[in-house]
Image (cartoon, rainbow, N blue to C red; front, side):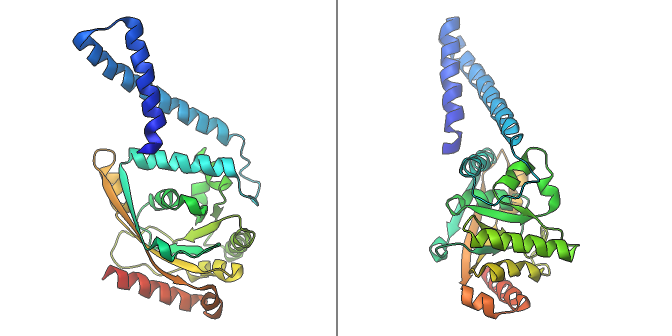
Length: 268
């Protein structure tokens, strides 16, 4: 909730100033404080969205992101934090001590469209980007920020284009620009059983010579139906780390089998 503090403080200061200027007293003062606070809070949020839109205009979505953009990464994470706060999400992380130093590829099950949003916010100190469907990077304004923080689009129906994305992600990791996370299921899974894996994505870690961090996500599927009226508890459990040497030795299908076993054992 700390990310909302600037909006709350601004709304409180302006509402008090407005009421003092108008000379309200007694019960009228209390009522108008609430009214003005709500009005200024909405106005602050609208202004924030306008700033977001204007900043996005300075981002070239066709220019490859080869370096870390400190300002845009920090601003993007703050936007995600605001979204998580308004959605009333409480994130619980376990096993974070297992995460190694340096760059790594994180793989996870995929329960909801909120997964990448909440993962980047929860793991904000690690400078994470994700490999996404091309449609995500085409979302007005938001897609430009997604591109700017290093996220890459992958066309799973075009093997040559997919390999190009995999090599680009590996290059960014080798150059210490960002770590990546992927969803080997390839799409959101509303069932209990894991979907078939698209094992080719594990080549990112092989090409970059980095470990693979296996994470299980729980609870994100409830965010859409709970927000903003009820809290949602989201759990991110770091289950296992496959070291870089083992990643290099295994075939992508074998990596997929190991990741699947890890996720399935954790859900028992």
